[in-house]
Length: 165
Image (cartoon, rainbow, N blue to C red; front, top):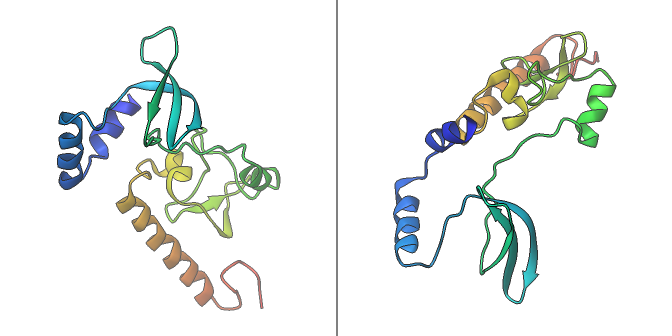
């Protein structure tokens, strides 16, 4: 379901669509549904080893340019994120899509308590906040996180990170 949702949710701006459509018509560009198995430098371009959707065998195409349009999928096992989880400063969201956060993007620790000064943005919050892959939503999330930090700084006796001063 996700590829269909993302295709309709994140459309190209009209001017980019027109340019891409022109290049496709002229044969200067092509779109493929395939799994990329590897990419190597080849002269001034690239040799892209791929397997087309539904095919059993791979093939290699040469290209002047190659774009990775798979999107970003957060990895909560990455060393930095994993260390936050190990220390109890963060936890995975219930769907294991990223980290558990409150509406401001503040990390929720092992005991479901907001962690002062620790925020996540974008796709890392998708399991908690859902629509966090497009720029407008990420900008709105940044605004909420900054407002939360400012409120914390304004609190009597704290520096915004939960430390008394």
